[in-house]
Length: 235
Image (tube, rainbow, N blue to C red; front, side):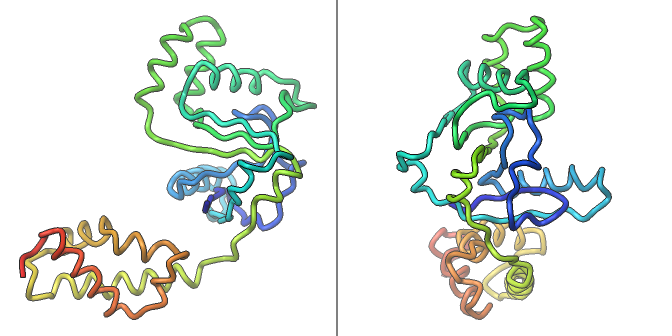
């Protein structure tokens, strides 16, 4: 699984001692499978540090879920158990971890949820009302690596800056061709909407497919065939 960490510096080497305590799942190194979520976190941190936002990429070895040497806690959704666990960690002694899990995975308590947790902890809102409210929160995800042992399952992915530039250049060429193609009658906005929501773009943006290594003309033919198959245009 490809996962991401948002900050104001790249993090090729992880030092758990530098991780802050009293977070949702305790002290640990946090990543998410949502790139946009990591980007938002990076921008938030960079706003205060005045440094450029940075998203570091890792490959998470999902064998961890089967490794009997690792103790893992997974929350499928917001629940009473999730809330109890977050409150436990938020209230924990800063000098020690409140649990003995190697990896914890589940939802995030963002700013809005954190404010509501505070109300809950002060007795101003019931647990039932809080859990009901969480059902309508936007999708999010986090994995906390709490021990040195767990970090063996997280492998740093080398900087993809050059690859990102290649993908960007390819995308520009494809958009230009899409707008000029005689089989289409799309303006710039329509073309961009179609391209960026297409399965072809999804594969291009996924480095694991290697599609970015092909010519933009070949990728354009794939996109056009996809649009024909989806009846976006008729032959």
